[in-house]
Every structure is written in C-alpha cells, then in structure tokens.
Length: 276
Image 1 (spheres, rainbow, N blue to C red):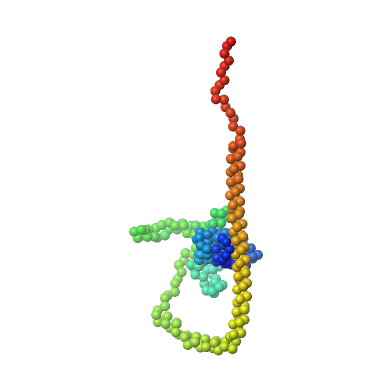
Image 2: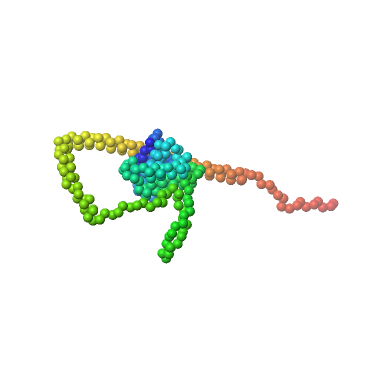
C-alpha cells in the first residue's frame, strides 16, 4: 500500500506541505518525489502550492493502483492507464461513495500522463504510454468567426460531456432547507441529553487519544521530511557528479590533443653546394 505524507516545515530545501510518496516498504518513490520537487521549486515558494499538492494526490492514487495490481510503474502502458481510467468511470469513489466526476477523472489521467512525459524526457522510460491524436475542433478566431482548427488530444481523456443537474427553484430550495427542520432539532436535543452524564469523561479520554495521535503524526512527518531532504541531497550530488564526469572527459580529450606531436616542416629547400 502506498502512503502519502506532507512534509513539515524547518527542513532546508523541502517546501512545507510537499507530498512525499512511500511504497509498501516505506521507501520514498524517487521519480514522483523528484517530479513534484521540480514543480515546487518552479513556484519559488517556501510552501508547496495547491497545484503541487493536487499532483501529489493524483500520483498517490496512481501508484497505489499500480502496487495493488503488482505492476511496476515503468512497465505501465496505454492499456494500464485506460484500465485505471475505466475503473473510475465504472465504480464509485471509495472515499465518498459517489461516482467520479469526469473532470476529476480527466485531471488524474492528465497528471499521470504529464508525469510519464517528464520521465521519458529524463530517460527513465523508453516509451510513452499514451498517444496524442489530431482532432478538428470548431473554434472562433480573433474576429469571432467560426472555423476548424487542428489540435492534439490525449486519447485517454474522457470526451463525453458531463450532464449537470437542473438548478433548484426558489420554492424547492426553501422546502429542502426547512422540511426536516423540526426533526433535526429533536435529534440534537436527544443527543445533548445523552451526552450530559458522560461528557467530561469522554472529552478527557478523547483529548488524551488526540494528543497521542498528533504526537505520532508529528514524528512521522518529521521523519518523512528529513528522509526527503536526504534524498534531495543525494539526487543533487548525483547530478553534480555527472557534470564533473562530463567536464573531466572534456579535459582529458583536450590534454590528449595538446600532447599530440606536431610534425615540423622545413620552410625552404636547402641551397645546393657551389662548384669549387
């Protein structure tokens, strides 16, 4: 099972709130961490932006699905992403119990595709697991004249429009708000009477449990943030080492060129000896 932890504050180079993904062995999922760090550093903020946090939640859901299916992330292809999309189309959310909105499905699929496009550019994978197809779209130009334009469309994006519910009329909205007003008040009075006898004891026990849980969460966040900082330093050190190796190879080639012997050519022919 994949776990997501938001970085705490106080760790140099790690924005507060940065999503950090851990696999089932509690090891940081390095490609996701590096990709999210790049987006966080582009914003230049000390705290991760809402966009970065959303990307982290999308990747968390994706990597958790891969781990449950026992699929290595580099081996995912278009069929795997399509199955991930279709699962959201066919099944309700495990958190809300309601069907996924198509905007939510498209946002998650788009984030996954952005991540894989980045991984391809970085040389982490050798194939792109999605296709862009050309589509003709009716658009308006600068003078508001209709015309057809070509654009690249991700074949995995759900294109069917989502049907929106009819807005409630004023009288329907009023009935909805006040129809069960009396029953709600009765339920609140009954709940209050039940809690009067044990309110103080329950509050004390809840406070102790809450404090223990918060302390454990703080320790977990601090440890995850520190591990992320160590990983960031390791990645930066690897990048510096690669640059130094390339520079060293250039210097060796230059030194070989300088040491290579240069043939000396006579500037003029020697004069012939004169007759005695």
